[in-house]
Amino acid sequence: MTDKKPQTMGQQYGRRSWAEPWKIKMVEPIILKTLEERQQAIEEAGYNTFLLRSEDVYIDLLTDSGTSAMSDRQWAGMMLGDEAYAGSRNFYHLEEAIREYYGYQHIVPTHQGRGAEHLISQAVIKPGQFIPGNMYFTTTRLHQELAGGTFVDVIIDEAHDPASTHPFKGNIDLDKLQELIDRVGAEQIAYVSLAGTVNMAGGQPVSMANVKAVRALCESYNIRVYLDATRMAENAFFIQEREEGYASTPIAAILKEFCSYTDGAWMSGKKDNLVNIGGWLAVNDEAVFDKARNMVVIYEGLHTYGGMAGRDMEALAIGIHEMVQDDHIASRVNQVRYLGDLLESWGIPLVKPIGGHAVFLDARAFYPHIPQNQFPAQTLAAQLYIDSGVRAMERGVVSAGRDPETGDHRYPKLELVRLTIPRRVYTQAHMDVTAEAVMAVFEKREETRGLKMVYEPEYLRFFQARFEPLK
Ligand SMILES: Cc1ncc(COP(=O)(O)O)c(C=O)c1O
Image (cartoon, rainbow, N blue to C red; front, side):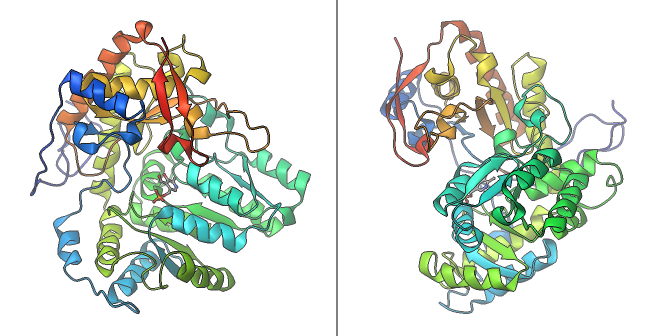
């Protein structure tokens, strides 16, 4: 028995159990390969879970990107695709949805998030400028660097400490931001790059108070604030849950208020927006819009499809509407928390509090005997696959890449493995199986050795690097 607030509409006051606000209409069979087959598969994949074939995976927690199950409404919307080259009606539905739920004026569609990152970076960064932000994200920072900018991390210190239980670990440290402004001058700052939630910090949220304060500071220096809105609906859930004054504010209203403190956003529709492909850039400034709309025709497609089919834009518009339903977002975040709480109760080291889209295992604490240059998180992800066919992702030294100045590895404080939960795809039983797999790998931790990197591509190496076990 519990008197806690119900997690979803299916839970009645005083009862323990709650359930997802959907039922399954179509299923996709999955299989668990034998241990020998899994060992061979990971060896052939160079101990990089990105290089595994999906058929060799049992429970796929590599990413929540493009892996959502669409609703019957979204599939019905796919049949309404207007595949005209120019002026597709689905584009206007998408534009309406973004204006209604995010509140931005001008919309440029893109094939996915990094397409939008490319456009905003090229449109507003001048070579030599700085882009302060609440922790880097791989593709975001790379596009900022390719445009000639330098990313500067101004997130609060707690974000770098896996054990800190700060409720808004995604917050910007205003003193760090002020210090950068004083040091380089406001005109040398292209914009503030604010992400809600912060993927690399463990899916941690930004508070409404923080975005308001960032806005106020930036306004006084005429600095723009652009939002990575990829998981902003999940961020809104944490505000509703944790921030005073928002407990009875609907997710949709929280999202819109948050966005109102920013000048625009880029979006990977493959996450919050519940589609398998798609993205967008949205801004309020007409001059920035003009540049981005002109550039999109070079890199993505005409400005009324941007690399998406008409049917994709329809599914995206419907996904935005579904994303802000309070029941959906509560069950989504609570499923992640269910897995995290279970693992924590068994003593598995992980990032706290549990984030919005994933449980992040702390590979340093998991394997204290494996130094960071032997890739503890990469090792843990490989071991988890070998044990149970569960696919996770490295978020540590491999993802951080090399420092462009020194050529050395960047050694991030956080050396993590991400168990990322796709939206509306797995049940709580899959979470139980996953938790037991992690426990089994934990029990064998002392006999586990690290890896050496034997192939390293130039850009975003975590996608394609190859490794071999150390003897
Ligand atoms: C926070 C964040 N920003 C941007 C992106 C890039 O989006 P996409 O993968 O759609 O290119 C991602 C994708 O993982 C992300 O998590």
